[in-house]
Length: 107
Image 1 (cartoon, rainbow, N blue to C red):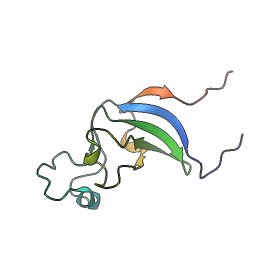
Image 2 (cartoon, helix red, strand yellow):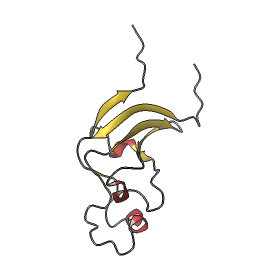
Image 3 (spheres, rainbow, N blue to C red):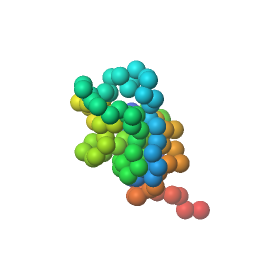
């Protein structure tokens, strides 16, 4: 079966089980994602425990794609763009699989 390079494939629906740092507070991404007049930014860039989403494969690489409408999403996404792809290495070994879409081949 051929898969297209540009096709998105959902592999797992997951829940994050421990806080994971997406970017540091001093990075350019932190400056871009900060809301104006935000008082507490100590947790900026942290994907919080309990965040849900998909592990997807796109462009030959794996990513975490969080659900857009959930509490705490503003901590690691731009203010007006909650749909992001986070590199898989940021959440590797820090999630629990809730549902898998991968069909394992029988031996």
